[in-house]
Amino acid sequence: MHVQTAQVKRTSCLTRPSTPVHVQTSLPRIREEASRYTGKMSNEVEIGRGKRARRAYSLDDIALLPARRTRDPEDVNVGWQIDAYHVDIPVMAAPMDSVMSPQTAIDFGRLGGIGVLDLNGLWTRYKDPEPILEEISHLSEEESIARLQQIYSEPIQPRLITERLAQIRDAGVVVAGKLSPQLTQKYWRYVVDAGVDLFVIRGSTVSAEHVSSRHEPLNLKRFIYELDVPVIVGGVCTDTAALHLMRTGAAGVLVGFGGGAAHSTRQSLGVHAPMATAIADVAAARRDYMDESGGRYVHVIADGGIGRSGDLARAIACGADAVMLGAALARAKEAPGQGWHWGSEATHPDMPRGQRVHVGTSGTLEQILYGPSTRADGSLNFVGALKRTMASTGYAEVKDLQKVEVVVSPYRPSEAR
Image 1 (cartoon, one colour):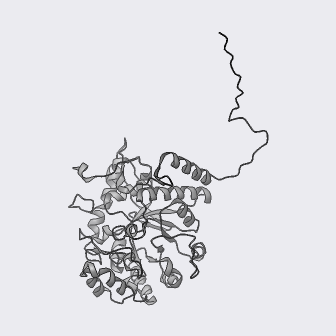
Image 2: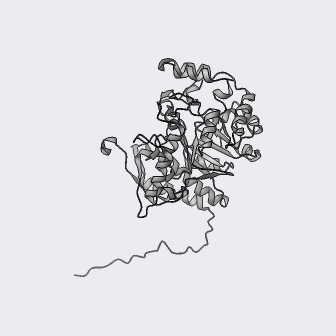
Image 3: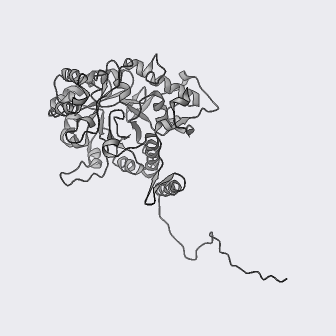
């Protein structure tokens, strides 16, 4: 039986084109396109025929794996330097009235961290906010938000900005103050003249391309360029938005919405960013920006969702250089909130996106940071826990912990028993 075979001419996909093709692109662009492609292949789920979504992970969804090499916890270094300021631990205290007063900012600085004072909070609206803080601690749940809105309707007094920052400066610690993006243009001069070391611009969501038909938005790039003070700005939760903020010249970028335990942005606006994925995405933007800028390093600071000591280690493993603690420090005996915690989201006059929550008291500031711990829930001895994590995974420097192997393993308390 005779079988006739067809001759098929095959053309290799590697054949050089007859006409030279010149492609001009950049490494960040290649990485961006590659990540989009691989994301579609492996990390997307179908919500319905007309909508797909990317899978994202919270800090509770991941875990760190020990390495073949371990270290003594006393041999690891947890110091952190941002711009010219070197501190003992990679921890900032959140600029929230339930967490930071001028005195607790000083205490926190003396313990090796950086306390950030809220300059559009109670301490710049009232000469003596202690009676106000006492009242807030005794408000009923039903009246708390309405009363907070009234309390925070008092105008900011510029002279109090100067006085509060001077008090911190006189103590000899790093001076950090925060303004919201909406108030930065109005009050920044008082902050700088008071001698602030780190200027923090913090909002629920901050972008480098804010559009408004009502007033001229803050031009972050021009503002930071003309300012002779390092600026930390956020929150942000995507690589694209973070890259744009890095291009403004910021020294650090805050990842997340802040006030994790006290905000209800997901319920109110439907907006939420699982922190593990958000940190990893912004860390990737930092890498791309380093390639783009010729090596300029922007610090990634996880802000929100760091409630327990294990969250600190997981945030750094995902790519953070440091974390900003809120609720964890609101549990301190010295905290102004007296066991209660709230953020600026709860005081918005038209659309509150947060609430006052009871967090209780777990120990002193020193115990929360350094122990000794009398609990096994991760609420005390954050620095000791970080050191042990680094020792277990074999890393001597905090920065190197970003290289640790991570697995997706959602935490369920019932499985831990």
